[in-house]
Image (cartoon, rainbow, N blue to C red; front, side):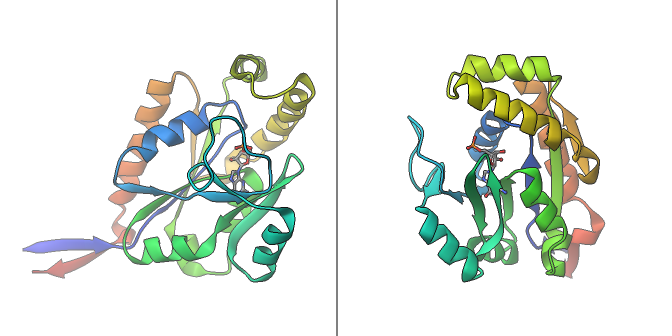
Length: 204
Ligand code: 5GP
């Protein structure tokens, strides 16, 4: 009987904040076939967040120590705070054939695309979620109520800059309803799993 094995896929999702990406990712997180990578950050913990589940919340000094030690697959300064992906667990999951989901900004995605490690580049499937328009994005951010007016302005400016990068991603989803976004996202995940170049044939 023919059988396939494959190494894991590194799904990288970027979207300006307020696009609903976090909700999308937490939805996908509930399915057991993907491992969600928990990032490190130096930003303050928000109400309702849990250390070790949403992020590993680290002091700046500790974060910088980890960058120096080469422990980060990528890292970036987003809105004045460090964010980064711990490298060790990602490499382990991919080698074991487990698919991983990263919710990171455009700077981080660029670093992974430019990775010196060919196995990381081969594992990558990157997806950009495009907000319907900036007015809608502002409404969503205001509705969420977790940022001040000045922080929302900063995020809208950042969104504008981030949207310029969408062509660098293999896939782009124009965000509509959460249900629609999820269907498209799932379709991409499924298709990536059937790419011939990812499969190794074994005869059992
Ligand atoms: P938030 O503070 O709202 O949770 O996230 C702010 C931004 O940081 C989001 O665009 C999110 O995708 C990005 N982000 C979260 N974790 C990482 C990471 O590990 N690396 C990078 N480069 N960006 C991240």
